[in-house]
Image: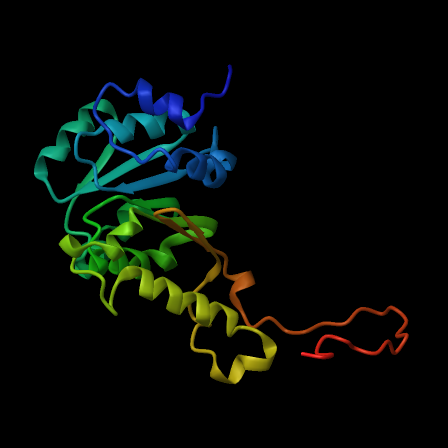
Length: 228
């Protein structure tokens, strides 16, 4: 069976879905390794339901596709074999209430309300429920620069992302006394146009200790700061 691209699956969906054209290459970059596997894929923001069918065709029938929306009408998609939960993504208690039902997640994609607080709550309330090497993907982050979403603001989601990038770099051995990021199992942060991806890995989210191999030291002069 020939593997279909995510763009082909997008156009094959029987129901409406809206995506930016740059997203398809990003999806392939991030998600292709999950094709044909028994994964748990959770999408926040169902709307017309078109993307649910897209994801099922792309990942294959082994994937458990879960939709989350605050509109009760989204329950209609259960008839098509999707798992649907109704709730507010900015409600911490909502996430706490469905953790046991979802189990550990491979991919969480946030295409919900796009407000800064909604995106931040979705990220931080799910970090510890993602499998190692799993992903949290926040979509449409251009909302951090749009007035209709209360931005630009010092509290925008992208300001949160930049702060997390700073803290990720503070894992270096030389800075560990100032590190307040160790409790978050984020190993990678990938930034694309309008999409931010957080890779979760507990082993690779500790202080990055400096190590030296057993090779011969030639005592070569370090020119890194010469004439700077």
